[in-house]
Image (cartoon, rainbow, N blue to C red):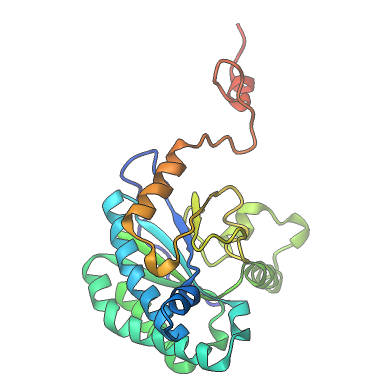
Length: 260
């Protein structure tokens, strides 16, 4: 399983109440186009324009690790013309954006199974990753031909082929075998277009992510929508399965505190 270059640095959020890592399920491009009586390809192009806007808003807000769900393993079932258009759009976007990303200190990493991508697209991915591999100000993961289930299956197969005793497999070893190895898990996952499902996105990594769903279609997602999601996140109390006692201390802390 081919992985992107390891992160050069793990940029921390500007403030402790912010998420370290945001994942976004970008949904609604087709609906955006349909409402405007445009072809679906126009919606996908509008969605690409939203990416820069949201990346800049994340950086301005102080969040520097972002993972975008661009194309799932299930998306190959879409009409052939739409899939071909999307693949061309990925190539064009890498060509047009990578120099600016590099200048801004963004490390671009593509996660997902690259085997099904065209040789041309794979070369562009390799070139973009190599150019930005040294950057550490921001990390942008783009999930292309990505599926959370297939990621887990392939990681376990690779561990087995490398001689790891799966009977003794632990969470840390499996986490290190995933595409996101070396990165903190997402603290916040945003889903646009009002859909209430995770759609096979970061199933392992998102186990304790806070979910925020917005009715905004992805091409319309604006800095104000991100600010709303961040405000929602900061208002939540994250207990990670523990229980708070009446005094406000979580149960884990209370049990760990010596008596007397």
